[in-house]
Length: 389
Image (cartoon, rainbow, N blue to C red; front, side, top):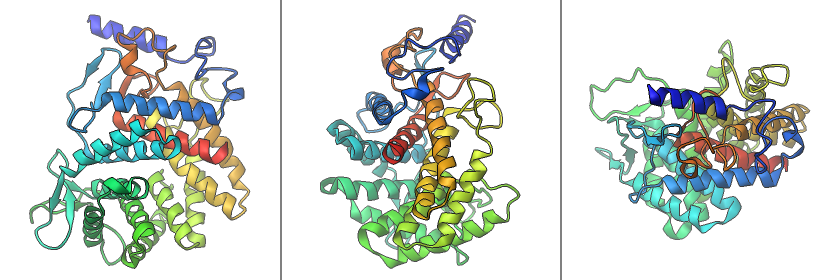
């Protein structure tokens, strides 16, 4: 009962309000923040998120996965290797901007741990990524490949081109003739394949196109284009376009590899669908910049922002006037994201503010931090800083 009461008090204290939080000089919350948003603040917030991850990294390279800041307790949740791979990728994004060796060292440990989950397929020169639920998910292979490709680009001395190629071979083997993908590598012939993920195909495409950019393997480009074509056509038939930010990022890379009107057009269409669900200043004061339906959460805002950054760049490159609307939405989104980060000033009521500092809470009503909450906020804030400022 005492723990429940403490949680309620802390949530009330930490919720942004129109009247308070002006003591947060580094990342102001509330009215007046709009004047202070800029590149320096965004990169500082991303660095604080990176520092949180570095502190939360274990000696084996994994991370404390789920942290309850209100109770100063690590929650006993099953580890998720897809989110681990994404976290490694975000640290590489952070290193690319800051060149801080701490983030590179953390990434090396994270990727070394990631590779302990690689398993060879029964036949052929390929590996899959085994998650802790015993499944070999397409998304795990896609994000692991994206992380390894980014390491090849930024840290070639420690790069693993052999396993990157083998992950790509696994993704190619999971692609059907129509361009769609199996969501999992079948570990047994009786494995169910009914599960569908919105995000796994885009993650797989991102991995393929990023490795192609480094090794020029035309098989990867052809597969990525075929996969993108399938997703574009299937999503256009939906009543409402989905918030597929991973596909948007892959479309941005595909466009660079060979401009095709459909890539830019679909990414911008996905952005417009996202913006239709974004809260603005006419909604609840604490909701502005987040996304509905319901109370906004940190990770949906951050992950959508990653896709919106790509859509903005594509709109600018083709002279589409909707770039202005996307830019405005990104700035509003960044303001909301920063209100969800624990800082020195706004975490004083926590039992262990030093531990929580830099982490991004789940949302307005939950002070819990999971590694992917931090991952998406790091990458999106860096993207906004690099693109708009």
